[in-house]
Length: 300
Length: 276
Image (cartoon, rainbow over all chains, first blue to last red; front, side, top):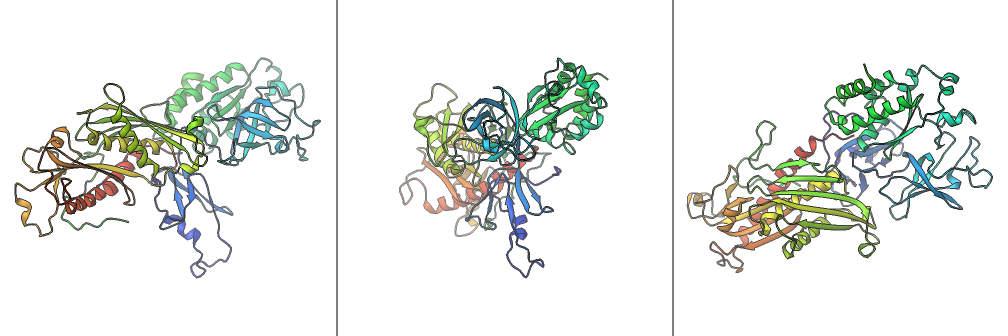
């Protein structure tokens, strides 16, 4: 995803770029494989559009992925609020559980989402939580790392799923050290490299560490998710000072854990100040200001 | 669908970062940090300033809930005093225009709330002076908020003035309607002229006032025409104070302004914002 001087697309603009991907004319294309285009957020089908049947309905830039098996087109834009779309990784909070499902909070401004127990896979063998025995006993307020599975505008609530053991309840190392050491975490490569202290030594003195859940703006979330491109300046600057772990949910929640509480707070402050200063809007992608903030918070 | 220039019109405006055109509005995007999309718009000539905020999709009150559509709510807050019939009229006009722009089927059973505050106006009682800034500002806020829209629109206010004398305007604001006979009439002092986005003083001497809204594709979304009491109203064939031939030419010019200059203004305003 490149950001440099892409043309802004307004709702209703014709998209001639997509025409070659849709052409059914066999004389134009040499290969005979069927062509299909997946429409991502921001694009919809509309038979009345003059040039292509695809109508952009939000402003933004066109993001076209053609190198994958199925080409995908979407409109990249940053709305202020999170709108769930299928396959988004999200961090949710358990509100209550009923006989068939967990009821969770996806965002504070939408009605609660649900995780049906048959979508909650607890181990690699594919056992679901639908049996009473295998049901995880989660406390209310537990943080669950899940994926969005069904979003339908006519349905009451968004359905989430836990597709494997790498998802599920997010437990800090403090708790896992005594019970199981299953790592349900999405570690960023940049932090994994920098964290020199690992293993028993770091876990031993973690008794008082509570992980932090930070609420971030949508641009900030996208920046943290794009760890190799957009987020690299900030993440490597922070990871250079403090080793930490994080899980980013697309719904604007970031789970942050480190070896000491002080370090958790430092990381949180770096991200928070970066976000509040809207440094992601800078010309250089927040490189200079990110370094300034990290230097201020973590010391030289 | 682009409109062809058949008339020798003033050259199209070129907006550059160095010297902003005197007819380009002043636009501030996202002045309200807590709303989903907000915009402040200042009309370049009449200095009418509008601040709008868009929130949505939100939870809707049960009595307003539509099973297959989003409910659009437009609230116009006056600059002075409490909201009355005038504000209700303005919000109805905005609502009906937006109804054809917003894809309400994308978020059924939700609410899209638009609040427009009149910050500054020369004449707080004049509907035509307020309507164009309100519409343009609202459309920009909707874009920022990411509300699904079929297309975008732009509004322009044109006033027909009996004589060019006494009308002060910036370059490009005043133009003549082409007569069928050719160019020979153009030098006459008594010929009526069209003033774009007139201010209160110009509007008071106008023959008629037309607020036109066009979509990017050239569909007409709103026509609000008024016969003004001053000027030589009531002389036309349809008895409405303006000649239908003139009106059609005026509409064509309005379409050109909306489809070309308006869209350029929107694109320029949004180009500064970074998207991820």
